[in-house]
Amino acid sequence: MSTILEGEVKVIATKGRGHTPEEIAEFALAKILYVSKDANPLIREQAEAFKGYIREVLVKYLKQAVQSDRTTLANKLRDAGHSDLIKILET
Amino acid sequence: MAINQAMATSFKVDILNGVHAFGTSVTRGSTTADTFKMALYTSSASLGAATTAYTTANEATGTGYSAGGQDLTVSTAPTSTSTTAWLDFADETWASSSITARGALIYNDTQSDKAVAVLDFGADKTSTSGDFTVIFPAADSSNAIIRIA
Image 1 (cartoon, each protein chain N blue to C red):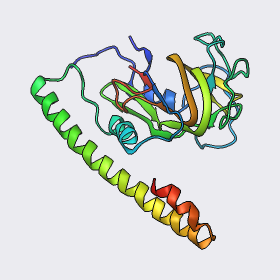
Image 2: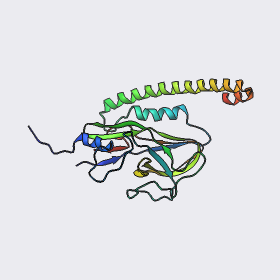
Image 3: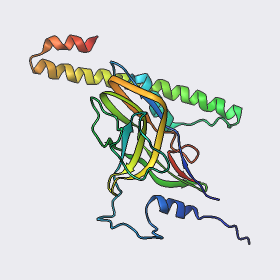
Image 4: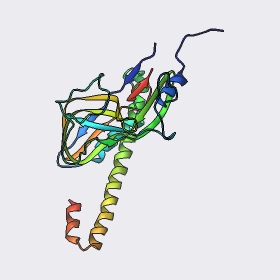
């Protein structure tokens, strides 16, 4: 018998800030790698270790992307004569 | 040789692609994919299996949210793994928003706002001058948001 199934979503809502690189890394990880609860323990252990490595790489490069974008924004603010606002980006 | 009664896996994928029409079909203007949207709702909304189309009743409001919700991106077009057909949407974010919502409706904006799926967040979720992100499950035949097994 065939059935139509619906997956479960999660919601992450923030207050007074956007998502952090760590949060976005988790969103990406959920798409990249899913480790089944029913998986063989040895395979699951390896998969979780791999997931941990991917998490570190994602966080590192997401932080780099944020920093790089701030550099671009700082230059745009400077060019527009708002050098004082650059300090806000540095906090 | 053997004959195993089964619903063809390719048929399941075809259903998700709108290939077959056993009843009166819709007139399509093109062969491109339809546009699917997600609207957010407060806990006062009445949504479920009987919901047939998008409604503005008890739809969420707030900074960063527009009536009707936002377009979804199909991140994995209908495909199959083993005998399960499935598809996936990209996570959806209402950025710089102040919204409170208890659930959502995925609907077909191209086909008269017809309902696709109702999502229950389990509790009120609130963003305050922040990001409100709906995270879709893993894109595979065991977890994807829409599956025909």
